[in-house]
Length: 386
Image 1 (spheres, rainbow, N blue to C red):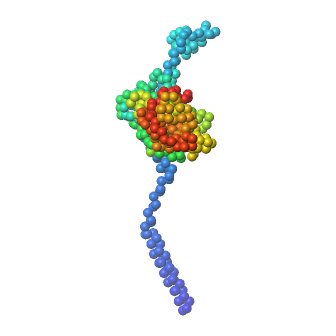
Image 2 (image 1 turned 120 degrees about the vertical axis):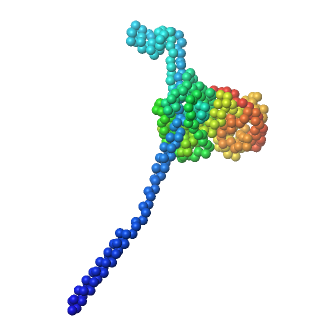
Image 3 (image 1 turned 60 degrees about the horizontal axis):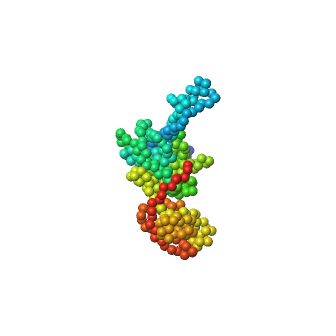
């Protein structure tokens, strides 16, 4: 009897456990699963999308600027000892006196650069050295259509030029940004035609701003970037991630890698307005030569710091001479703005309207003085050789 009772209890327990397990399994099978968590896009996806978007927006406004310089050989040409060789004679006539044996020849020297469309009427911004000496200019759009161009104006001191062509359809125009807002480390995108490879896009960062003493132009305030810039990129835009032009690519350090320079677009804006309006640029002039203010010179001249510029020479009859500036004066403010260095002073003066009177604070014999000067127009001087 006892054995039977124990056996019965075990059977009942087994049934109860089985039933509970079944209900639990049923609950698991019928309980809805939680919603799937959406996959978050990786940061690299957003960056890649930004780069692609900038390229798609800006590339249609980037053009190839082709030039031809015609060089004429003067006087008869003598092929020399091998003049009786028909093969050599053919070679000589083809390359040195085409169509006119022995009477001189004409050479067509082609060159390529880049540019960016800044106006729907067909104004293209490029470098002066791209179109320097050009007898013919051709503008080729991203659509491969070509148009003859003419040089509207050039500025040797900033290495800028404006070329105009007559479009027969609507044009993509680049947006000019604010180069003063650039920060070192920001992404930078260079677009151009290096080595004739149309519409090439390269990416880097802003390596530095305010670079001077590069020896490229008279007025230097370059953006430095490691975005790849090569021959043929000159005149093309340097762009930020918003698709705004922040600089015009102009030069590289041939002996280094990843060192390129662009003209800041805020400087460009002031130049192209004058080039489009009258074909040339006028700048302010005081009539002094200035030199760097070192810490040693600052101490000896009584300047509080090395921020400023030393007057090295005052030209007779100039606004500086009339206003009382003298050699060895230290200019510390110009028109109310602190002067960082002599390059900064040159840019401030150059950007001043002709005929305007400005206040200049100087240190002379360890004492501060304030002078009033009337700004004149700068005479044309040769630009640095490239």
